[in-house]
Image (cartoon, rainbow, N blue to C red; front, side, top):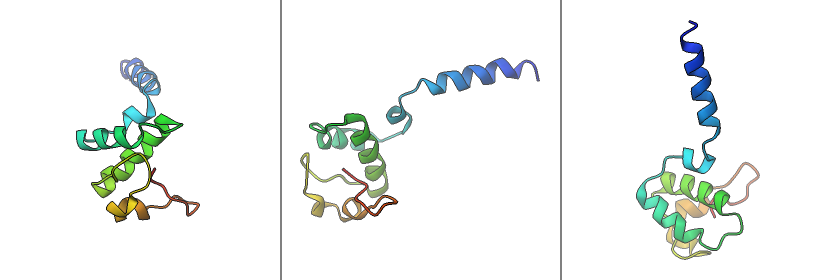
Length: 88
């Protein structure tokens, strides 16, 4: 038991330093599409996080940096718990 405690502490500490957006595993497709979609976003990390979540679920991201959500109905129709659009 004593041998595992330092290892557990090490793993907990290193995982706490990871960037939350980096912790979300996204495909190269989603990373590329979301980089384009979030290019002019005011809060880049939040845009990338939610775009990545939506892309992984919907398998598509609308073109451009804003609008065009008609290209991907799943992406368009995702809502947060307050009923507002989830995907940037």
